[in-house]
Image (tube, rainbow, N blue to C red; front, side):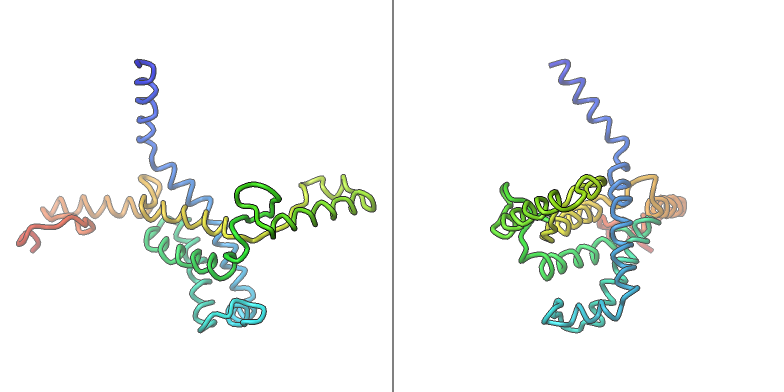
Length: 218
């Protein structure tokens, strides 16, 4: 029991570095949303067409403003996550884009991002994809330089399910709850500066969401 108590205290001491988790979440998400947003911006005309075309695209209403919203949200969100400004504010629209992406692009493909022939999330679609992949490998091994082709990684079939969109949504949800983290965010230092300034003036914290008794604010 003493050993368990010591281990518990050691784990609890991690709370002193609780800013590390949101820091790593932000740094992980920055390049993802930056690349997604800049690709949309570079081919914005094609992005609008893809958003609006029901035959080979998403078939969304108002494709131009929807494409603009998605592009601006991803680029602005990446900048916000990098500079650590208004992280909670940007987490909300970024989560919305992930929900839209999951529902319009990935939902019909199931959960898996990469097709697998077995496991709890395997479907008839991914099982067939795994069979096709096995056949493709046989052809490449027989007629191609398979060792050279796979030198930097194995071949896979993209299933394009909701796995990545759901993962990014959960990470953004964590940032919405946790904020950008102590010490390593502009949000934190601005908040601390405002608190010190208002305390020096004998006023309540302007960013506090706690109820203020009637008559306390001048």
